[in-house]
Length: 167
Image 1 (tube, rainbow, N blue to C red):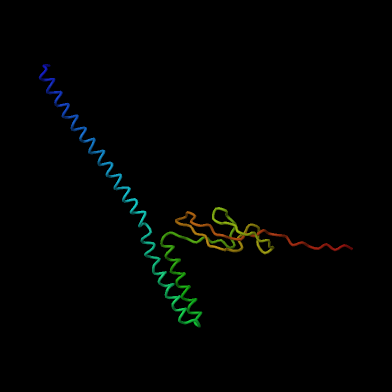
Image 2: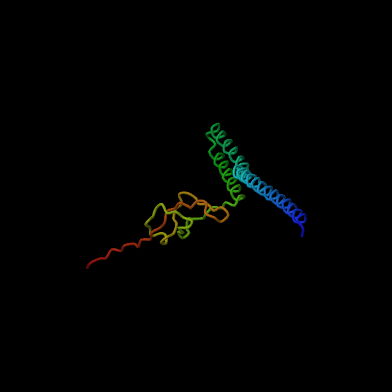
């Protein structure tokens, strides 16, 4: 091989190296732009991810406003007010269910520390040991994951003391 051939090959390799460097720099820039775009999209998603839930809850807020307005105008009509509140409660239950929220049934069930939070222990003969006897605050699951434990009172079974009679 002559020097001219080697110089030609060197120039080709330099050109190829420059092209590869350019491709690499473009790929790095593209990756950085992608990261920025993904971060922006994620921030936007987090900012508005509850939008549909909020839109579905707004009619409940409207219903509660109407119920309160009606109660202020018709203080004597307690039964109608209670019926209206029941309807709003049902609307809310359906809305929560739509988004995968389910209520934890607690009263009468065995105490489970995974889904119940014991606030009180009640001594009684009427219920079995470790049964939930009262619920202070309902618990909820979101798509089978604990959202909030049910806050409950739990039974501590006591045996009735029988008096012994001495002869």
